[in-house]
Image (cartoon, rainbow, N blue to C red; front, side):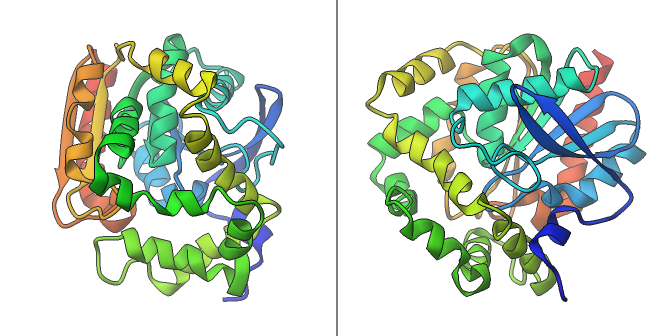
Length: 306
């Protein structure tokens, strides 16, 4: 497939591409359907296109599905700063308001799930409910990375992201082959991603300064542990999530231990549901989209019937 990074970001389909101004930046959003707003947040090393099949499924179910490129990814602004959860929460809340809605359900995978958890606490009036995918509660993730040697070992790749310049080069060299390597490493499904799917994510990582911005998320997370902003974030995240929460994870995820999720519900006072997808890795929505939809859609309908 002859595909440029720009073409990957603006890939056509049964959806509409729009730019939305929010929180002092411009965000690339992809829309499908009409109805209650569902905002979809991707993780690393992906971008909005990871939600391609779910945009249509949500639209068919009567929702307005919006997949957005997070700050520094895809067609969104690649800003020099702003890769902390406080700013990212404000980004999501700002997009929801800019779309003319008072609140929305937020579905986030990986780092996008961390943003969803954060927004539910820091921007609570704008967040109706959250579904987190392969994303333990941030307090549990911090505890596991500092106290659990096995989880720390699985997360050690983030240490390599702390160096200047070299990690960016590693992500994009040889046609961004490391992106495909990480996708296959963390997948629990043989054959996923197929070559065409891998190519889309490889090309998107080569767009503008995405590689640098993607690593800035991990740099903030690691470097802030002993700083006041990092301590304040964890303190704030100990406040309970009062909205409904759905937590989806794959039981074959080799990047996050099952026990790291344990205790996430302790930070939720609203209704809490958890779905463990058997024989699935870090990408449940990609590895088995049908089973993922069978978990997500009934929960969404329940949220909107309250």
